[in-house]
Image 1 (cartoon, rainbow over the protein chains, first blue to last red):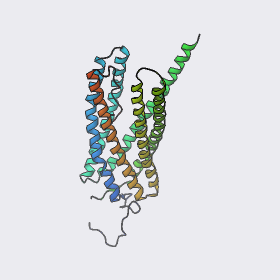
Image 2 (cartoon, chains in turn orange, red; image 1 turned 180 degrees about the vertical axis):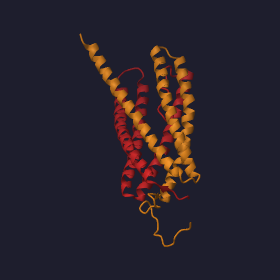
Image 3 (cartoon, one colour; image 1 turned 30 degrees about the vertical axis):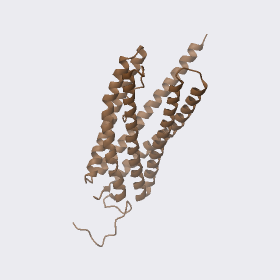
Length: 151
Length: 146
């Protein structure tokens, strides 16, 4: 199908391609495609960071002098590794879709937007969990200190 | 460049991401204030308290200030993304450009932070290996290799 010369010009998101579709401005598309290399770099950096963090924990544990130091390293690995892996998967998904978009696959734009929404949501959920834990630990610390202070 | 269309579902997804982005931006601003206050408190403590490891406290204070600046940038980019997506309700093309531009800034900034985190981990490994730091900084690290 050719372009009808009598159709009004399509602009930004105001006109639309019909059927609830809205044309994305070329500059917006360039910006979205511009995230692809950075997402790829993020994936690489996170992949490198995982074995380095494990090595760091093992080294620290081997030189630890108290059980508390060993426990804190084990704890940070048990909590930190799964979180890092979850985010690595989300970054990989975004990077793959953004790479497809950069390669000229227009349908990938929807998946890039969805992947970014998932990332923001995951950040938000982990932030809420972290906040709850901080409040819980602070409360426990204060209550513990008050109990110890009692005669 | 290929012409790309956004469906109503895409616009809904963008709007859904806005709430989380706004929430994360507010957390970023709060973390900026907390890090800045912590950094100032540590700097004052390292100068006034005659405790062993004063230099280490000074380094910690500097790290807190760097963290405050990083969180500030993160908060600003995320806030601007959320604001641009909010403006999309009027179907403005420039708002979409601004949203994706700030998204690109966020990813760029994320790579810089992840790189710094990786360097920190490497430094920590070397310091522990050489025996300069018998009990090293935390591992596992925040998502993003930091």
